[in-house]
Amino acid sequence: MHDETTPRTRALRLGVAGPVGTGKSSVIATICRHLRDEFALGVITNDIYTDEDARFLKSEGVLPEERIRAVETGSCPHTAIRDDVTMNLMAVEDMERDFAPLDIVLVESGGDNLTATFSPALVDAQIFVLDVAGGGDVARKGGPGISGADLLVINKIDLGPHVDVDVDQMVADAEKARGGEPVLPLSRKRPETVEKLCDWVRHMHQTYAKGGHVPVDPGPMAPHHHAHDDDHGHTHSHSHSHSHD
Amino acid sequence: MARTGLGRQAALLVLADGRLPAGGYAHSGGLEPAVAARRVTDMAELEAFLVGRAETAGVIAAAFAAAACARALRDDLSQMPELEAELDARIPSPELRKVSRDLGRQLRRAMSSIHPHPHFADLGPAPHQPIVMGVAAAALGLDAQDAALAILHENNSGAAAAAAKLMPVDPFDVHAILARMAERLDRLAGRAAALAGGPPADLPSPGAPLADIAAEHHRRRDVRLFAS
Image 1: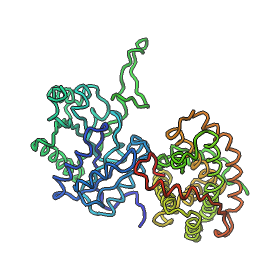
Image 2: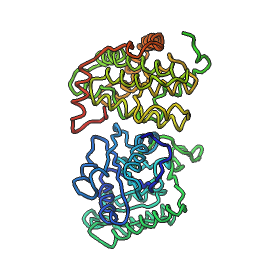
Image 3: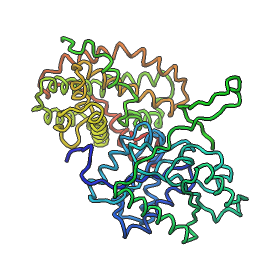
Image 4: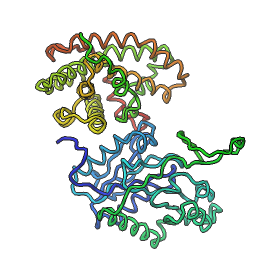
């Protein structure tokens, strides 16, 4: 066995990112439960402390345990999916080799803030997950994951009335921020929304398998204007992270 | 020993930089369990910890990196399995042996893309980190002393950086320790280079049993910031 930079069988590598508590593990569990009979799946979780997310997925029984592996990120979840992806890349490559041929490997990022997105060196496509309980204005605030991920999921829409969030408005804000790229309102209690999520994954896999999908980098923070810079009125990119939580 | 690496200092900085994307940031070099057990509680104890680590695990890693580099520079990998076995014998903790091999695989994966060389593929399924460091240094045209210095610096600065997440510290104080240790690391690297050509069995073998025990305890903890 040797490490190979290009594995013989290559799965669609699908990242799932988003702030803490929005339901990334739950989205992955849902995808596994509904698609495990159609696709050969593997899951890599990233945890900030230990292996909580991997344990959750294993306890849910969504896949055989050996197909769920945890990567410990040394409390740097952002780094592990963006600046230094080596640990995750090797976990994906090991998974693809050990269970070849796999169709899809899901990579769950450790919960971070709105600026954390996957490097195109690690995943082919990515889902960014928000939830209505995090506040109706989050989608409007934007950020690279919200504006540039291949799919934006707005999760837990059944909670809208309980947290005083107008779900339709939040979805409209998100669609505006994304310039027409897909936004999916999701609740695991509403099967029709789950089916839409599955359809998106099927479609992405089909596009990828045909070679028609080119990884898109949501990128660093979009250039934005600072009011206190108004002497200059310029826009500029920041290399550091802003938390908009 | 003649410095074949003269004029290659920039390559050494690339290899030893903590930002080299090889996953080192997930490890504290044993500092987390030491802090959790209250063996390291202030700056003086942090310095003693780092010095102790450099003089034990650091000396071993440096010797094996230098030895691997010297052999790779001669394109003679015939003793690599023996170096691997001798290094295994110097790391009593199964967890630390695994960490060393995980970091070795990661360094090889990174360097295979960053600066490819046929030697990387010849190192077996999961080579130790110091061995890969030695081979990577040779691939960059660096010598045995450079390889030793790179692994000493990487291991030392990685543990020191972890202090900022584990203890209430002033980062300037932490880097002051690194600055005070600079001469020591140079000296240790020189010693490792002087031994690089000898038989693998004769390479140094200082031990730190508490670090091995702490690593085994750490692996069993439910909540931790760092993988080791």
